[in-house]
Image (cartoon, rainbow, N blue to C red; front, top):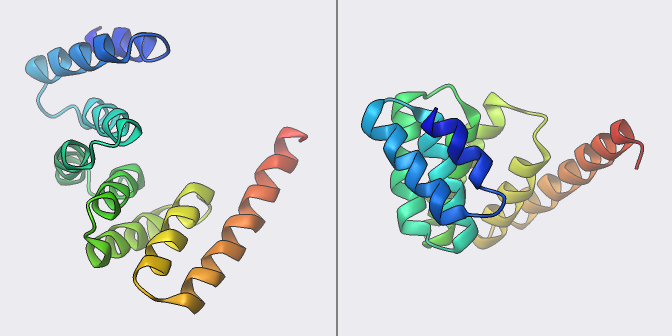
Amino acid sequence: MRYSYGVFLLVGDSDGALQQFDRALEIAPGHAVARLQIAFEHLKRGDFARARSHAQEAVELESKNFVGHYALGRALLGIGEVEQAVAQLETALKLAPDSPETCFSLAQAYARAGKKEQAARMRERFQELDKKRRGWRGQ
C-alpha cells in the first residue's frame, strides 16, 4: 500500500513519495523496486551519492534486474566513478539489450572513459533503438 501510494505521489509530491517509499522499506526491507524508485528520484535531483546507495542495495537484492544496474551505473557516473559506471551499464545492457536508455547512458560513460569508438557505436545503437521505439508509438 505504501509503495503504491508513493508511486501515485511521484507526479506532484516527490518528497511525499520518498516518505512513502521509506515507509514501505520499513515494512519490507527487501522491496527492491521501492529502493529503485528512491534511487531514480535522487538521480533526478542530482543527489548521486544517495542514488548510489539505494541502487546498490537494489542490485544486491535482485542482481538479474537490469534496472538496478542501470540506476547504479548512472549514479556512479554522476559521482565520477566512470569505470565502475561502465561495468554496471554493460551489465544492464547484457540483461536488457534493447534498452535505448541504457545505450544512451553507456555511450556517455564510454565517452567519459575516453573510449571514443565504443561511445560512437553505442550512440548509433541508441539511435536505432530509439527510432524503433518511436515507430512502435507511431511518432
